[in-house]
Image 1 (cartoon, protein in one colour):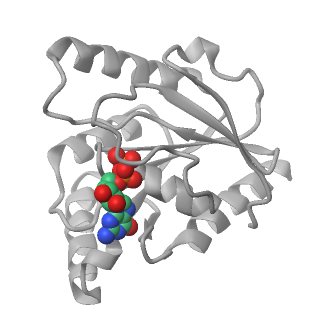
Image 2: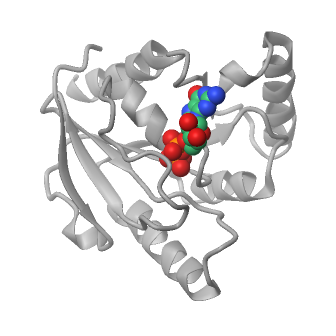
Image 3: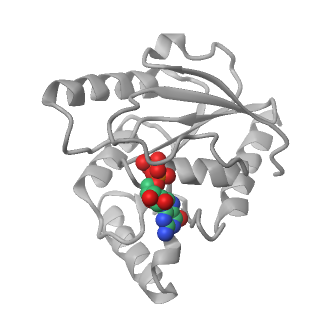
Length: 200
Ligand code: GDP
């Protein structure tokens, strides 16, 4: 899929104020600093569509972008920062829960995971929660340029081993690097195929 247009639509903290349109929607979420903004900018070939490297926890907003006038890319806040208070963690959980339970337009959530780290509980718990709530998701491994190919394979295998303890299949996954422009066509091709499936 070629990205011909990418426009910012709206940011808000209230899921009821998200666009009413029923265009297919794809959400990107992960721990803060995982490389989500960089990935969104790589996918859309825009330098600063999503704001990179803000102070973690600062932007607790749901950001909608309209892509090619026919689907929404949604930038959700990062989770898992140490510096926010318990109350803001709760508020965050509430609105993320509401986002996922209310957005019927959501076709797939992309859970971003830094390929360098061993499987982290916070990510595994989040995937578990998505699964239990019937929300389709794929994994996007980020920062693949930081590891050699055999280490990438090993880290993916670690994830597979853990996930297959509770899941029948490994979710779809993608290996990406925003600094080396890796994985862009795979992710966009996947979104394109899901969009086409829905048109049929
Ligand atoms: P966000 O907080 O998840 O939106 O993460 P950002 O996109 O702001 O990236 C966090 C940090 O990781 C920044 O210093 C980026 O330059 C760096 N980063 C993001 N993607 C990559 C990548 O693919 N490779 C490398 N080496 N660094 C990356």
